[in-house]
Length: 627
Ligand code: BGC
Image 1 (cartoon, rainbow, N blue to C red):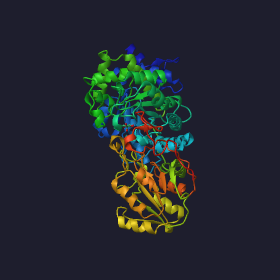
Image 2: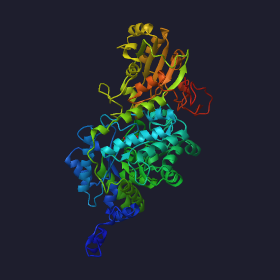
Image 3: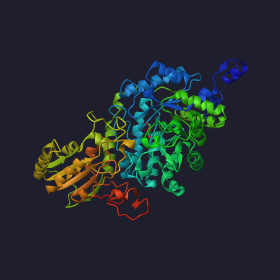
Image 4: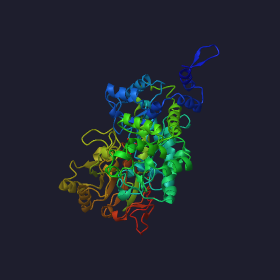
């Protein structure tokens, strides 16, 4: 009995009364609280802290019972588009997160709160009405850390209002291969630019004091994720120690310098080893050389994949299994340096495997303790033990006028003018200007907006401004024309012939992860045709590309009078395009990548082919005119 009393931390005070355990005392330093709590935890409770389960898996009372009361899971995430409440409104989010928190606390012997995590790389777009900021690649074209920090801070404000405290971003990968479906999620090709913007994003998300973060940021995806074989998401990466040091590690190092709370490993394999089971990467590089002391988080299903190859992209599923069973998979990951596992479905199997691995001596208990100490430290620093619930938020705080202005400024500063002949730009404010093409908000927003693959076709996108709307607002609707069906060549030809200038808006439909891999990076045939039809009219033509990667459209650009890269500019993209074209904002975006002249030259970065062979890019890294 004495042992139990000591373990439960019930000490006698001077007056003979029971004193609350030290870990509950907010005046104690965090390391003291962590050590005190860790000392009271059973093996099963420790294992639970390493399990992160996605909220789509928590549907019924029996799911809750199983996951919280039985498995004691330490964290919950919203996979892209998943919401914890009855709908996507801010208030439903906050209620949903609070509800899960209450259940978790009520069923935790030691009163350990959960921490809730989600992606938020360009605004917290899973909340209805939230601002959709430009994607990271666009922000890289601004080279402006203050802007990136401001956007991360504005995003974190909404994140916090929902009760979410763990943000899975920024993306610290360096772009290397434009065929890769996650190219637009990066801060571009220059490791130093990516480093400074990663650092800014971490500071924006976490606030000034990493010891008391407003929300935890995550630098992802460690490491070299952006250079998969053939540009296929999660395919094996081949790299050298020098390339790791010079290209891939710097943004993570910068994140660590800024006090990033967590680092997420990448899904795939590097030089023959799954990253999640790589001690050279997760321990020797991340912990020892980069000096990271926060939480290591696996990506979705990575540990399970070590033995079953059953989660995620086809490329990773197809890889050889390296562990005989879950217990050995967990052992390989924990011994390499993995900590919290985005399981994401079956907690019991995971926590059982962790316990078995420790009991069978495959994992030293000190290893488990260190991992649990990291996640508990994060929870204490986030204030979750002392203040586990989020106050009911005011709906008006979702999208403020300042948010819109910030998004517009960021998009305008990113827009990159790459061709301007015949003094076309800035455009004069008289008509008729024809705006034609698949000019939609869902394209501007890109993937990871509302849903994983972007705003579903046929549904209403978050509020925003298309290029047509932006141009109308800039020069008055009576000066602007469009064609209802841009695939109707005759109608386009007619309208273009009557216009003073034509803005052709083309690009890509939204995509995410491997679904966005493209072997050709070609413009869709009907969009290329539209451009040719307009160009043949000889009316001055300006191409506006709304795209997450440089597309292989050299011949179309050659015949145009002007060419502007708008990236994935988010909800204010149309206003921003108009701002730059009509000279309200001076164009200052600079390409954050090399634009190859041909897909045969890919992969290419910083104006060189990665295989070392000679190639002349269509536009060099850093290109951008200021008309
Ligand atoms: C992605 C991560 C993301 C996670 C949770 C994974 O598939 O690779 O970037 O944070 O899902 O949504």
